[in-house]
Length: 407
Image (cartoon, rainbow, N blue to C red; front, top):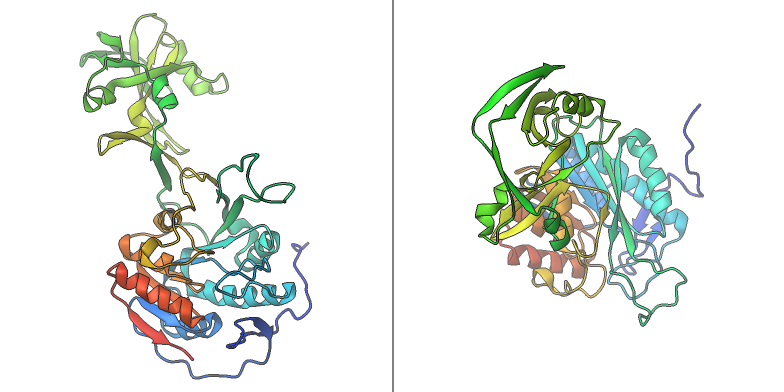
């Protein structure tokens, strides 16, 4: 049995960009000389298909992350780029370009496509075919706009506030790849639950062993309401107690070996799997587990920042899309993506010195962020006006790059 596939009129037919209108159309692609591209940061003025084909000669298998923000095909005439293509032409254009981009990715590289609801379902099935359905890492929902009030404008029955990032791996994901994290200011509500400080005694005695775990009893401890002291002083000791879930048989077995009320216990063991895999040290008091604030938050610039595993819902509070019209020193009223969004994508799916590709570069957000984070970049933009914005933005960011035209 084979997986379902998309079919549409003209699938496999080349899609060209009309240089006059900027619109995609079916056509006959004539062979063209492919120039040798320098091994530098690149800002390429040219059609994505032509640029990707030229890059195959020099960059095959060298890209760690390909992020694209293609036309959403919404029919919006107010954007600075063509966003009205026949559905089957749009699909054909994306398919042939993504297939080439896949060859540029290294083994274990990442492909991230930014899209909205109009073409999301079709693009996901297409990417399932190209990369493999089992290579989907996540479909991330970004809350582009905050909740609309009753006084807000808009005639839609249900407000459209979300855009999507389809994230795929090329080949098998490297198991050693670091788990991406997100950072956000710790809310007062969360901080309020860590209302006490606990300072264990330095002396403890081994009292039991079970399943490879060693259980110690502390000689004593100091448990107090959190005093109104400097954050840096009180932070390492802030804690709260929580009940252990009944389904955790290992933890329940540990607690069963800790009978004395009022005694602070410590268990040390090796966790074989899961996000906490490795050596662990946990404290227990009166049948409860001690949760330390320091395990979920850090102090940065005098404030508490929550650190958590990256999830697949990014809120407007975390990544606002407002106030970015002139971000990067270039003006773009519509279609611009926040640098904070690209910081999260580039930071999660590439490492220092690795190569990031964006073949719908727009105003150059991806390149500016990649340069700031210490990545190398290749940007491709077909529209001369957009390309000029991209170049200006890269210069504003102090990025070193070569500018190339494929016309």
